Image (cartoon, rainbow, N blue to C red; front, side, top):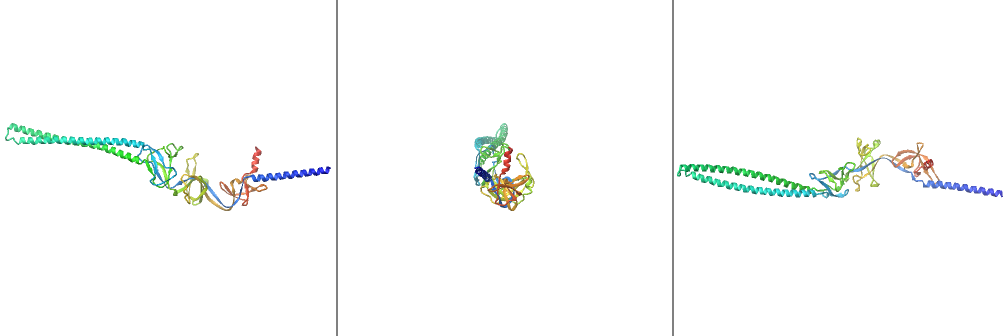
Amino acid sequence: MKRKKSIYAFLLCAVAASGAWAYYRFARTIGSNTLPTAVSRKGEFLVIVSSRGELVADHSVLVNAPLNVPNLQLIWTAPPGGPVKKGEVILKFDVSGATRQLQEKEAALKQAEAALDQAISNARIAEEQDKLELASLAHAVTRAEFEVSKQEIVSKMQAEQSKIDLSLANNKRTVQEATLGLNRASNNSKVASLRAVADKARNEVEINKRRIQRMEVAAPSDGILSFLMNYSQGWMNAKPFKVGDNVWPGSSVAEIPDLQSLRFKGKLEEIERARVQLKQMSRLHLDPFPETPFPGEVASISPLTEQNFEWPPSRSFRVYASLSKIDSRLRPGMNGRADVVVERIPDAISIPNKAVFSRNGKPFVLVVTPEASRSMPVEIIARNPDEVAVRGIDAGVRVALIDESASKKKGGSK
């Protein structure tokens, strides 16, 4: 009886041990299968230098507000970012003020022309009256001369009186001739002055008409309409021009960029400047199209650092990258990242950056198998923002993206 009990106890312990071992293996398997992992791959590893920036156009046509037109206010604009054709109206300004001024100038012109016509009529009437008076005095002179001619048949006293009358008639005619010239000059001066006033009013009417015509601005070329920043409220509050904004005469409101001249302009940190060279291949990743890389190459790099207007202020090099092909969806001002390929490593083993951990200052990875996970030391050959090239593991190896042991230690310390 005691022997049977011993056998039963032994069997019970064996079953409990095997169950514990099975549970341990199952827990290890479940734990290894629930870890986020990635598979190492073998291939060419491109070492890149990233640069944030935006698309800019090398060539563009500016759209300016009309000159010599005060109180400009936008009341309509073509849709920003939309295609426009040459000669198509893209901006309209408020014409109510200019129309009111035109009406006032036209009324002033009519008044000036009426005053001019009246002055011309008065001058003609006055000149005709002066000419009539001069003709009457000339007739008096002729009659006085006739009386003088009878001095041989009249008394001496009467002859002297005739001579006196002739002298007085000549003097009156001379005075009237001078008066006629004076009045003519005065009337001509008055007419000329009123004509100048009328001409000025006429010019002002024409100026206002041309101003109203220039209140509608047409596109100078085909392309995409892009509005410039309005800095009237300061640099911090600058926004693109829109309906309702007041515009300075002659200022640039928008631009029509040449899409074929688009290129990437980005910032290059001083520590990366020596690694980037001209003609190096680049891949442009734009924020609106994150899944579509646009190939190109480094076109130019600024020889000196430039001060930016961000806060805190810093200095960096400017790098420009051209595009191998211009996509019709691209627009100036699109933000993105240019990855410049500075080195190529053939047949490299690459894994995500998050799969490399450090212990005692040495890098390692956690290789995950169906049974368990184990750490393996690796050597880092090159590093990119998202992936690294390593030596020490083979291709097709599944590695963990989280160091489970480190997480447990942190949990235990808490």
